[in-house]
Image (cartoon, rainbow over all chains, first blue to last red; front, side):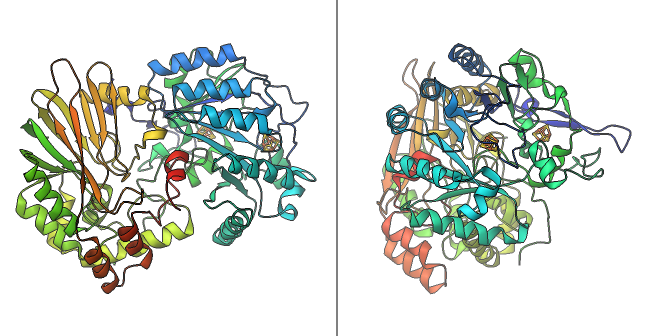
Length: 319
Length: 267
Ligand code: SF4
Ligand code: SF4
């Protein structure tokens, strides 16, 4: 395949109110949903309503993981994201991450509350190789008051203990915060979180803010999307499609391959069992959450992975 | 597509207006017996008097690939497209872009607008693709620790090339891939490689031995970095930028670094 053919493309529908169809580009990121929808927390804003008894999607075995990693090599995958639910509920998580790291750069998305010194010690050894092991720890604000209401009593302190543990082994976790405040407050919240991480002794704080996805548990909390918050034909004209996660990623679950890490509750998000086919499968951006992706771009990848080519507001030339 | 044929080629990127390092690099390349010098883009940004670097490169008749910064300046875009979210990084990026835009002569900007996104080099028969970020995007970062072998092999396959040279990240690295293929990130000559050494880095690519991958000679170039830092201060550029030039440690635009690269630096 040529580079030109590996670019994502949008097919508009003649009906202007219909969703455009996205033909994905090259598969850059393979997500591994290693603990399905199983999580020790039950956050009020979880977009897949994960929890201790949500078994809609189950655990991946290390053999499943190995098989998908092998397949991903032929597809030229650039990096791996390991997620759930809470990946550290998986009894084989250290082996999974060690294995993934032997294939390429790996990011694990965790709530940080279950990290044990033994895990982190083994992972620090595994991460001494060529590729980065990134930890992303989710919290929701710079203090328990802003966090625990959404994530549960005591969860801030437990997450930050996990953070401290990682820092003590030389990791620089990316603290991921879902924006549950007004956008204008972004720089202020960002600064407060950075200051909090510095106070805890982290000299190189890394922070990623993400927009709230008003689906799953969050739909009940915030009321979900308005009927006109949809991506419709034409909205992808002159749009930098690389910004959309589904343009370059797929998710492995125990129930098959999913279009993106966001729509795990959506039946049409399941693209079957064949990764090679699923990687190229077109998808109609008909979901409300697609509107958030369209608006904010690159919401799931690590900072710096996809810089915007065209800004969202091209306001005049520089002076 | 521009095509160049050579056996020993100096390849440098990320000039970032560092005209003193640029002169030193070109002198070093000539002394090291390079038969060509090629620039992988980003002439402006960060440093003082952006026109000076443009003039040196244009007068020397060096082939230049368009970087994201050249593209933004050339098209009069409102920013450099580095895509920072950290308000501090964004402030520095905006300062630097505004300064560079204002001090780059319209003729140089017009020249930047028309630079090619890629150059093909035949390195004694070895097909080599030269671009700024990656073959598919000028602003794609190819960091050593966040790029799998499978992905690099795919980039080479889809580009019909046995070797690939990029810049954009500012950190040099190389990886050999079977059979006889190589990817090189030549780093940048505009600012040091975030390792406490104020010298800058570029690469000399050499023709492949029988059945092997092309060779890389890493060149560390010393130049009068104190003079550059003084010019930056005189021009009112941020003290943080001058500190990087003097100490060899990056002080800004750090959020895009992956874990390993970030852990190695001072900040
Ligand atoms: S947001 Fe994360 S930590 Fe919270 S319930 Fe969902 S998966 Fe678990
Ligand atoms: S939710 Fe986002 S990533 Fe998923 S299909 Fe819609 S646009 Fe793509």
